[in-house]
View 1 (cartoon, rainbow, N blue to C red):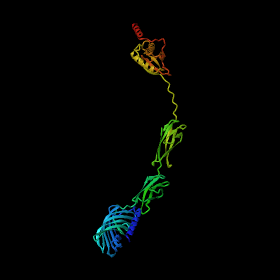
View 2: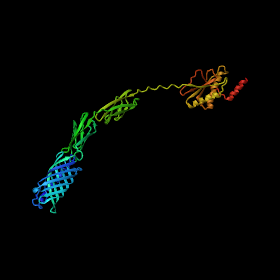
View 3: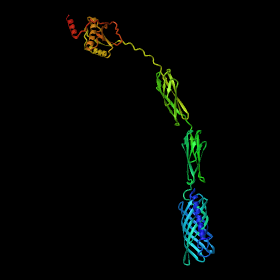
View 4: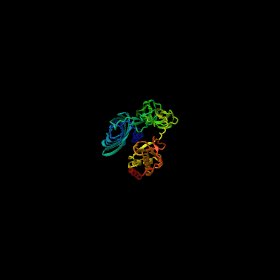
Length: 509
C-alpha cells in the first residue's frame, strides 16, 4: 500500500469516528478507571523509497495501558512490535495524553504519544530514535468489563539514521483488539424514581395530584411516564398525574408511575392516598330570651360546625308563630301563638348534603291578670301635741311638731289636715278648752306656716287627754272620726298675749 493510500485510509477512519461521536456522548454507567489494550496492528513506516524492498509490515502486536484521571482525560503508555519481509521490524515504546468520549454503547478515544521509535532494516542496520504517534479509535461495549476495539488508526512519525545520514519517515498503523476495563470514575448510577401525592387524605370527589421525580437517568434522553392506580383514573403523561377520586369508596389507594428513557433505563415508584369516611356536621341551638310575652320575639342562635371543614347552610322550623332567617341566627315572632311552649328546630347541611338537627324551646307566657284597683285612700294619724292642764297654749314643743306637719302638707299639696282637740274631764270648761286647743293649733299652721286655712279643719273629740291629734287626709279620702265635732267658726284663736291676760284674770277671781 502506498503512503498516499495509507494516509487517505486513516483520514477516512478518523472522519467515521467523528461522525460516530454523536451517539457516544450519552452514557448510563460510569466510565472505567484503567484500560488495558492488546491486539493486532498493521504498520507502514512510509519509507518505501528509502530502501528497496522495505514495504508495509502486516505482522504486528500492539499493547497499551491507560490510566484515566477523569471522565475524559488520561495518560497512556503504548508499545508496538511490527514485522515485515526481509526481517525488517519496527518497535515503539511511547507515552502521552489521551482523551475519550464515553457513551452507552461505544467509546471514542484519541491519543498523542511520544517516545522511542526503533526501525531495523537488515541492509541498513538499526536506528533507535525519537518518534511520535497520534490518532484514535472506537471501542464497542461488549460486557461491563470488556470492550472490542474495532478500529484504531494512528499517524506515526520517526527518525532513522543510516550511514551517518538522518532520515525522517511519516507512516501509520491500523489495528484492533480487546480492552479490559478496571474500576470506574464515579459511582454506578441506577435509574430510580420517587413518587408523592398531595394531599394524602381527601374526601370522595376531591382531586389528588401525584408527582414522580426521576433520578440517575441519562439527561440526553426524553423520559416517558405511564400513570396508573388501583380503582382510580389517573390522567397525565408527564411527571405529574391527576387522580380522579369521584365515586371512590373510603379506603387506601395506590398511584403508580412507570418511567422509561426508551432504552434500558426504567424505574417505577408508588405513593398512597386515603379517601376518608365523610362525617356529618354538628349543631346546637339556643333561644334568647327563652320566655316571652304574647306577641313577643326571641332570637334563635345556631352553633354549627363540620368536622371535615365543609361549607354549611342553616334552616329553621317552628311549631307556632313565624320564624325567619337562613344564617346562624334567626328570629321567632310569636304573634298569634297561644300561651305555652313553641318547639324550634334548627338544621345544618353541608355541601355533600349531610345534615344534623337540634332544637330549643321558647315559652309564651299567659297574659297577666288585670291589675286590682288601688285601695281607697284613708286618713291617717300623723302626730299629736300636748298641752298643759287648763291651757290651750301651743308651746315650743307643740310648734316643733306642727312644723313637721306643715312640711308634710307642703310636700303633698292635695292633702288636708284635721286637728282634733281633746281635754281632760277634770279640766275647767273641758269642751270649750278642747275646741280652743284645736283652733290654736290650726291658727299656728295657717298664720305662722302659711298653710291655706281651707286645708286645715278643727274638731273636738272625746279623747280625755290634754292634747290635740293631727290627722292627714289624702286627696280622695274623708275623715270620719267618731265622736268628733267640727269647731264652730265663733271660736277664735287666742294669741299668746291674749292667753296670758285670760290666765291672769282667771287667777284674780
